[in-house]
Every structure is written in C-alpha cells, then in structure tokens.
Length: 352
Image 1 (cartoon, rainbow, N blue to C red):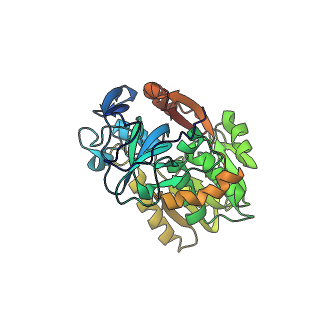
Image 2 (cartoon, rainbow, N blue to C red):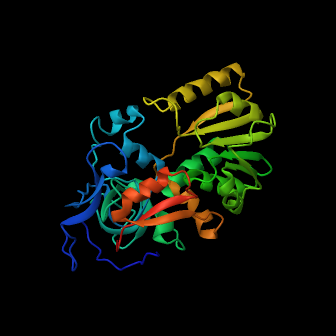
Image 3 (tube, rainbow, N blue to C red):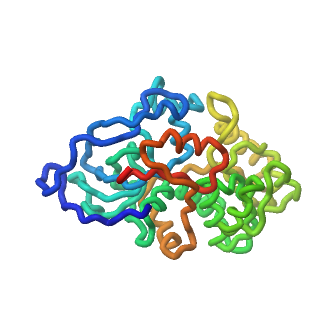
C-alpha cells in the first residue's frame, strides 16, 4: 500500500488547528513478556511530546528482530534495560514512516506535513513520538511501507558493511543470514560498493539473495562457508551462531568479521557478550592479523540520510516479505519467527 502525502495543518503543541488531533489512538500494547499472544490492540492516549520530540502520524511500522526480543524478554539481560516484569514502554515498535503532525518547541528540522522515517517510541500505533535527532526526511520515491523497514536494519547494515568492515570494490564479502532484514540490505550495500558478494541462506532463498546482488550463494545447511580457508576479506555475521574459529578460518589475513546481534546461546545473555569477549581475545592471540568487531547501529537521522542517495537511485531497494494490518501484529510476529522471511515485514497502520 502506498502512502499519501496529505497536507496537514502546520501547528506546534498548543496551537489551534482546523482538524484537531484525536485524544486517543489504536496501539499494540504489551503488558508482559511472552509469545505473540502478549501483544494486544488497545485504545490509548496519544503520546506526550517533549521539547525535542516530533509527533508522527504513523503510516507504516517495520518489524525488527529487536522488537521480537523485547516481546519475549529474552535474553533475560535485556530486562535490566527494558523492564524486569514487563516493558517500561508498553506500546511496541521502533521503526516508523509517516507524516509529522506537531513538533516540540525546540524542534528546528521538521514541520507538520513533512514525510519522515526513523526510530520512534512505540511505533505500532496510530501516532508515535520520536526524537528529532532520530528522524530523517523520507526519500522522495519511497512509499511509506518501504521506508518503514529501513531504519534499524539499514542503520545496522550500514554500520557493519561500510563503517566497520569498510567494504570496497574487488573485495570478497560473505554475508551470513543474507535473506533477513539486515542481511538483505547488507548484501545490497556490499554489492553497491563493488564487492564480490556471497550470501549464506537456505536453498529456497538463494534466488532472492542473488536478486539482491550476491554473485554466489551458500546453503548454510549443507555447505561450510569456512571450507575455503582465507577466502574472504570480510564476513558480516548476522546469523549469530557460527564459532569464532570458523569465522577466523574463512578470513584472509587482515580481514574483518563483523558480529551483528546474537541469536542462540544462553538464556541470560543470548551468547552475544561471550562472542564479543571471545572475539577480542581471539584477535589478540591472532596478533591483529584478523579482526572480530561488534556492530551496533547508531540511532541517528543523519546516519539514515547517508542511505538516501542509494535509496533514491534504486541501488538500495528495501525488500518487503509481507504486509500486515496493525490488528494482525501477533500474526506478523509469528511470521517473523517462522524462519521463512525474505527481507522485512511491515505493519500498515493508517487505514488498518
């Protein structure tokens, strides 16, 4: 579904407008941790907007793996940051794309009527507040559903491929987990940089990954990416579970393995902390010949704007696996858990 750039009144909080905002909205609320059944559609008040916040009418919201972790409360270490018994922020969601309807007194970059995308506070809702610094103008040729899946995945891939691995033309790059939200963008960024890209995925997703720009694919179930010792200049590990020894074997001397997130492992930390520490230790024993670095996305609108030229030129196309209306968020989460997703999942909020 393509969004529309409806003309909205230019107002700041407290100003009069012809079409006043509603007092309440539909939102997906989570009052505990668990499976998709903990996500409930409820009517709640609109979020408060602080001096540096922007209130966005959400047209679409992208699902990210991080939202799944917040839903389940796993690994348990996350609860220290998000809430011990239940999330401190009950409305779910981070990624958003929509139209600004009001701005805080200290906001200078946006005005009502602007189309924006980025990271907000509770984006699975009719309206969401977002820090001005975490939003960017929507690229002109994107629809809301396309823009909504970019922020977390795009920023993570940008950090991994461009800033940490520093992928350049002629390099051999392996992307593990190439068909997912982050992986599908990482493949495109590496290809756009002129690298020779290999994508590891299931056999059924190989065609999709090649369409993204990968020259080769590996079936992670039957093929060992480390079979060719010292073959890759960079490995972008989004799968989160291969041993560091196998990553080292796959890398050329001077190569870089970028650890993106972490799946599997123990229930307390998910194994990510252990992998980070293990990577540092391995790098020391390897005498710096190979590097094992963690990628953490910067939640920044200015970082998003680095992706805009690629999005506008078509060199980067946000791949969408499926679309769900807001009231089917639980089903969307079940789809995310299925392991069959190619690209990203988006919630269509406006009109749902």
